[in-house]
Length: 196
Image (cartoon, rainbow, N blue to C red; front, side, top):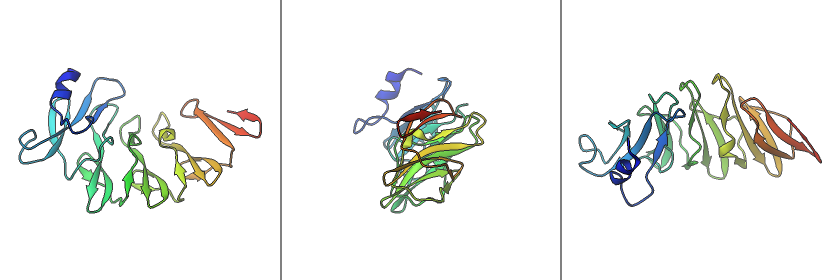
């Protein structure tokens, strides 16, 4: 699909929401406007050019596509709160914000994770389950699945303390966390020493 065709079919009121599959073979984007979507829908998602009607409103910059291009997920309005819909079904989340760009599928496309905000508390949400601990900050770009999709790791901050969290298990405090080296290793700093 040609990107210019996508851009010309989206609303000009904001930057278009576009998501690519990890292999680059599939593209999804949000289309808005009466008469541009099936039925009387105000918004729809086009996945490889095929329209899918979505319930509710789509939160900007939350669209995600599974690695195989078969599934879509996005933040959606649920009354006065936001939740995440996967394949058109919204979870039970009641968040003030779904952090844009944080929504991810596991490599096998079976699991979904994202970062959300409720009041001043941040949480990581995996398979519709919020982390057991509330944080001052969850680094949205740190959210990562293991290659087999069985484990989820992210970096969180509680005051000035920095933690790496894997499968909702908080690892020992560290002073700083560098980039993830892979889905199984990350750099941490304690004092003047860095370790992997």
